[in-house]
Amino acid sequence: MEDKNLDFISNEMMTLIRRASLDKKHGGLDRSSYTLLCHLSKHGNIGVKALAEGLGLDTSTISRQTSVLEQKGYIERIPDPQDGRSSYFQITEAGSRKLAEARKIRLDRYEQIFKDWSPQECRTFGDMLARLNRTLDE
Image (cartoon, rainbow, N blue to C red; front, side, top):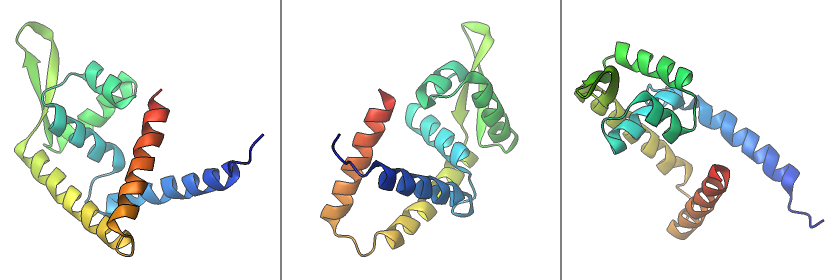
């Protein structure tokens, strides 16, 4: 079998995931809250089941996460006018502001992280990450 440096990649992935999970101090939103707010911001009103499918999580996890964001006033539950038993979530003005603040802080952080990288190196890295994410989605 061809040596693909899988042990090296495994160790680097573990380090990246551990360090990336420290992002809460960079914008005041933990990874799951940031991800959920980004998804709602991009896709608009969406229900629990669709959120779960879109993020690859189970509905109980989404329910817990949306409950926290709802308590903070970052999202609101909107009743479905066609089905009184279901509802949708939408990002609030406060949620949009918090997301914009967190995004700016994160992008500023990435600006520092990649300050010595050329635009082409950043593009290549982004392309490789996108390829990895597509493969993980399969």
